[in-house]
Image (tube, rainbow over all chains, first blue to last red; front, side, top):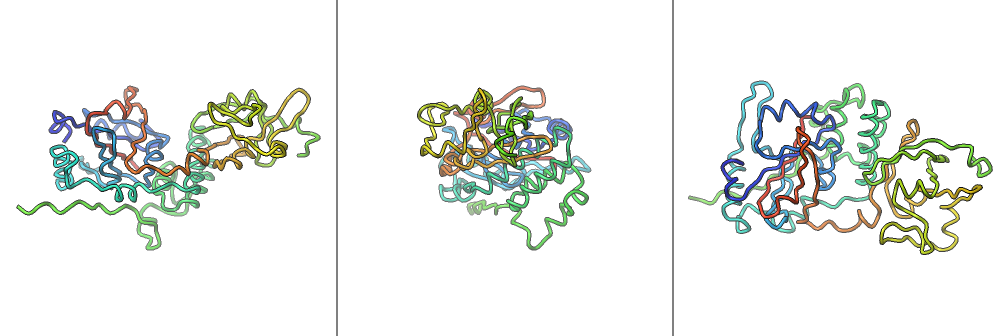
Length: 207
Length: 152
């Protein structure tokens, strides 16, 4: 995608929201061998700035630095963990091509209300949860997993809809042992918070 | 702890203040409240006492006269500042780990309450695997697809 559209003033930037940083991400990044900037964000700074609650999350940013499409829960290219086989989401890629070609006239852009809704507005509890999460990451880095778990649990209790906080914490230790749950269990819980925002791609125009 | 033995409880603390990590070589911990001397307060958080109030850069927090009594404590030649009580005043989230004497202070109330402008793209600077740093803002003039992902 990037190589195809690069000459039309298009760039891809990927950001890994992964507290284990290079240790966890290096094999994935090397397998993808990207030509675009592939950045590491162990402190979840970008998730915080863009108020995202899960991955993946894609934003389209225009030449003026405005968000024109927000928080799509989609991987454009997905690689099978076992086979290494890559599949491209063609419907989404068509949308990206349309945007690169037509710019602000593309029907794939979100309007201001949609962007506002999809970005949300952090409240006091979001920020309190963030302080616990940040402290948890710091304590984990210091090697005190038990102290980190205490902070992560506080973040989870305050903001159960923040899947970044849960999935990251579960990944750092043993979810069953440390948090009494597993990713599958939590994901399948009927009472669970919505996992992703809807992906509202416009219907392709009739030929 | 009573105020009589205030100075006896000096510990070394670690403070993450709005993303900046600092050691506070002298701190007093009372309950879950963190007290710092004025020079350390400035080094850690940027805040300092001025005639107008508690100030940082262009911003000053002005309190009613009796409001400072909860924030400040004089012992010998040291003035101590209660950073936890100040956080309450400015509606700042705080997380605390007593075992490591570590505090994490989030954004100030007037920062997190400001309505997020829907289309605004906050800038960031992060490294790649080779340690080369990139900022979003250097791509102004191009269309950018920004994709957040994780291995977990």
